[in-house]
Image (cartoon, rainbow, N blue to C red; front, side, top):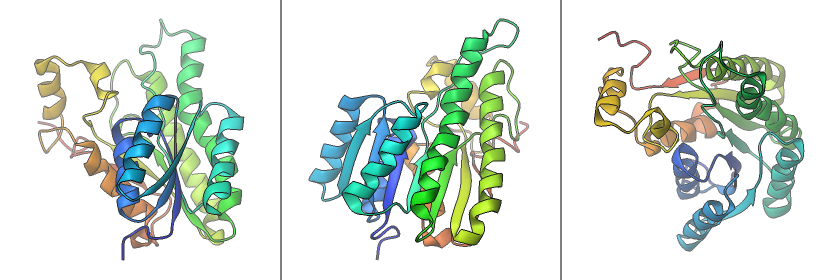
Length: 252
């Protein structure tokens, strides 16, 4: 039996990177999924690929910072598959850097995309999970948790805030059978990672920050998400789970 057999999952940020890889692996593990992101064309290409491979997926494009979109994703899960068991709230942004030159508008944009969207997602996902329990997973970061990186104030604050939100929700809804965790990836070969730079010297520098001396493939992070989504992690909640290739411990 596959790990997510008969489960229904929402995945945001699914048009590329970790979200896309997770969507494909979730379906391979038996889940029926709703995929969300801003880019409609990429979402529909993903759904076609999944459905042609024998999986079941539907897409809804939109903006995770909008309350109506978060509600619509849950409504679509119920309408399409009758329930919601898993939510991987993965959509996010690096945002603008700095602090003294950072405008309040740019600060708020990063907080809204990374943190307020997590609140809005949970606001609608939790009621849908109360009947049967479920697993909510946020994509946070080692940045702002175990490592501070210059020039990433807004990003760090938003991702640290996600962990605080996760811990509170895990404590509040554990008695009702809803587990809430966060995954903290290290550097991963995604379009977002390319915003740091594509020069070989930059890639080498970032890779050497990690104990494993390399960056992750999106599928490696996705497999850890499967663990948190599945019954294999049935006694795991309130955890900020590092999947960071040792960047948090490496000093060489």
